[in-house]
Length: 70
Image (cartoon, rainbow, N blue to C red):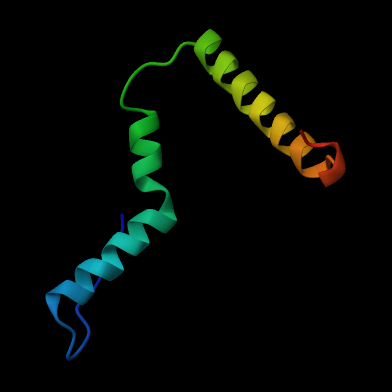
């Protein structure tokens, strides 16, 4: 459970900003969205394969010399 306490002299907007940052850093929303619907094992595997392919292509583009790009 995340908890943010109002500091002396702090306004509500700053308090909410600190809370939002804390939620973002903790990964709470990412976890909530991941568990919001059922994802089958096959679907997880396909997503992992797509992610790996994107990483591989990105790595290949980075290592390609500028003279070879057309």
